[in-house]
Length: 442
Image (cartoon, rainbow, N blue to C red; front, side, top):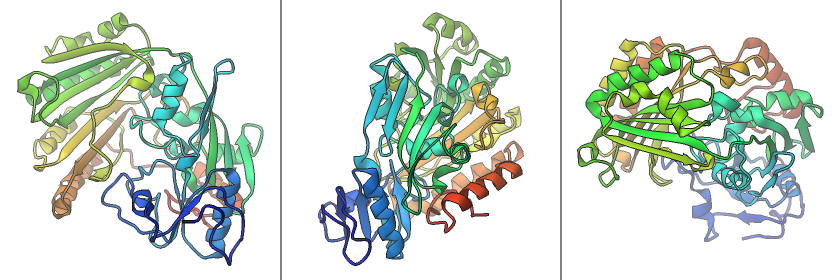
């Protein structure tokens, strides 16, 4: 293991972080990512401690002709945060979080996770949209948009960005904001990791010391009625302060709920409101009237909202997001039929979440696509055995086909696509950063 420099013969730049190769004891742990289906062997894993280290790693990768992957939390489904035989810039050592409670700002290292940001902000009664998977890295989800529990009120995570420190493909260190490199700042609101390595992000925080939450569970047979009732609440244009999701899920035995709801398919609603518990109860009265078998109400810090656990890192996983233009009865019935065929030994969550509110309000300002979608469908399946891959992936593919009638098939607006390509040409003309939802240079 090298701690003082990258391998000789290329840039020769000093490196204050760590460099790992296949012969190092920490290598296997460092190369592992969240999705166990991704099993790649980088030639080098660099773990920078500073932006200068990041610049040195980029120069070395280019000089050595190595494909460069950038890792924050390692939650890319496709494995974009690692590479076979290339160089990984693993930012997890750069995970500092600094809160300015007076200015209501959070300065976040490029390797921090959303749980680290949320905990630091809640100490001051502040919050930002964040991410539903709190162990995910901050940078990746934010640069692609960033969906979380508070999005209907605060917008996507990228909407609270104030500035981003970036190291570009030529090793330049710059700050993008409304006044500095505004073309790049615009592109980073949905353009993902196409333009460089984000070493620090500054977020505007919002005074939300607590949120009211209600968790409701029903037997599986209630799924259709629950989803229709949930849909009716959001079709009725509730305040943007109300969010949440309705979830079809498997639940392993042992969950602290009535015995009849353990061990099989369950219908769940998580409702989140930045107002009072009483207001939340009034807003979801139609759901409570359906007689859930389990009701849990709480008032908690936004960072403490926990989705249903999906299991540890390393399990084989597949997830996707479908953006729906509508949620008709036929689709609800088809989703229920699909979920009822869940393969054995598979942990599944299929969430339907309402958008609108502040999400839609930012559609004309930033390039993040699909923001006009009223509903988002987000299934995740996790399993252990590679022998089950084909069967489970085929089952998941069937859901994608079912949602085709309602799915919004258009992505980034053509005019926005042209602007993104122009920014790519300006900051990464050689497409060094291509392990992402890639935007080719113009």
